[in-house]
Length: 145
Image (cartoon, rainbow, N blue to C red; front, side):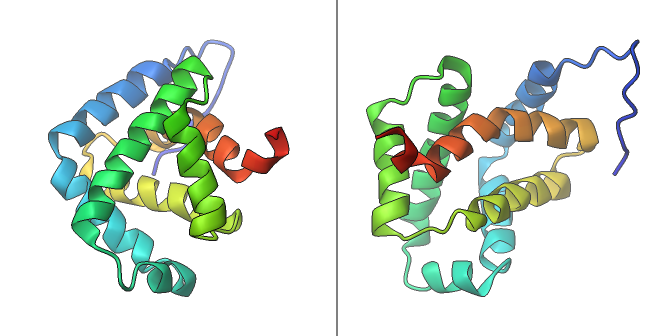
């Protein structure tokens, strides 16, 4: 993976980089999400146990919607009902530890690296920037009550 070397002359459009790569993901959803889950489930015994009896077809649909909620939150900074429910369910119903969100993000990036031909460090940074607000909201849902 190439490193970004920031200088005063760098003008990096992370929105464009994210949008291009996300368009690729949308055109290759099945490949992306199957690759993501393969990486995510094998990333930790805790994740593997959590998905042991999961209907993966239903889970795939849920994670696709969740990506939409997270991206929308990045754009609007409005925590709509679906994002709030998603965050509360992950905290209360699924008992997701805050540390697992980093595993989630790293698994997303590993899947993207595996399937996206233009993947590089700038792309990884663009995805981290885009996912960060939604991920932080989910990690800290009870901090805002």
